[in-house]
Image (tube, rainbow, N blue to C red; front, top):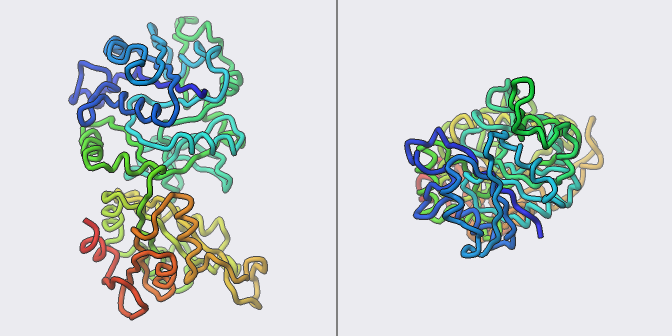
Length: 434
C-alpha cells in the first residue's frame, strides 16, 4: 500500500490573523480542520498509511488525530524537535519509504483523484511527478516549463525573471515521489538538523531535491483542473471557505462529471485577423478576461478548442503556436483568469501548397465542424458534454457543438441551428452563467 507523507510543520505566519494559536493545518474549513479534510479525501481513495511530520504546536495535531483509528487510517508521526528544513524529515524517514509515496503539504485545500495522479506517475516512469494546474495568480506563483512529453525543463519562482509569455502551469505542492531520488542527493541523514561549522544543516525540498531534476527527463508535470488552493492569506482562506460551502471543491474532483464552456479562439477570445501567424497580432477582445473569470468562478471548465490549419500550411510551427497560446494565458493570468485546457487541430484537408506539411494535409476527426477536440477533452477531463456549452463565431463552431451534444452558442449573427445567440463572450457569461 502506498504511503503518504503529510508535511504539517509550517507556522503559517501569513494567515496568523485567522488563527495564531493553532498550527495552520488545524485551521477549520467549514467546521473541520483542513488536515482532516485532506485525510478524509485520501482515505476514501484507499490511502490509509500516513506519516505526518509535525513541529510547531505539534500537540494540537497529535492530540486531535491520535493514531488515526477514528478516522479510518493509520497515522505515525515524525516530530521535528530541531528545524530540519521542509524536506529534512524525509531523510530521517528513508528506511520507512520503500516504494513510491505521496508527499503533500498539509495546509493546502484540495480534493483530487489521487489514483489517477499515481497512475500517471507510473506511466511516465520518472522519479517525481508534480501536480500542476492553472490558477488566477500565476504571476506570483511557482511556474513550471515542460516539454511536449510533460518533462520539466525549467522551474520559475515568483522572484525569477520570466519569459515575456509563459503557460499558466503552477506547482501545487502535491507530489508522487520515488525514494530513489533521496539517494541521489549528497546529504548525510545523520547530520540533518545538526550544526556543522556553525551552520545548521537543513534540506529544502524544491531547491535541493526537485529543481536539480529539471532537464533530466525524470520529473514530470501532471496537469489537472482539480481543486488545489493555498489558503496562506486571509483573503484566500475566505475564498476556500466559500468554495467548500458551495460544493465547488468536491465537484472538481475528476472522479465526478465536469461541465465545461468550450471556447473557439479567433474571433471569440482574440480579435479575428484571418490566419493568425504573428504573435504580435494576438490581441484579447475587450471583456474576454472578465468573462473567463466568471467561467472560473462558476465551476465550469474553460477549454479552448481551435482549428489551426496554419500548422499544416507550414506558416506557423508548433513552437510558435505554443508561444501564441502562452501569450493568451499570460494576458488572462494578469487579470485573474485562466484556461483549464487548450486543444488545437493542426490539420488541413486541402493540399498542393508551397511549404505545406504533407502528413498534416488530411481529413481528420478533430477539425471543426467535427467534434473530435470536444470529445477528446471530454475523455481527458471527464466532461459531461450534455451539460456543457460550445461558444464560437462561425458555423463550424456551432456544428461541432451540436455534433458533440453541447448547447451551442453563436457570437454575432447568423442562423446555423445554434441554441443561443449573443454579442460576445462577456454577454454570454452575464446572461447565462450565474
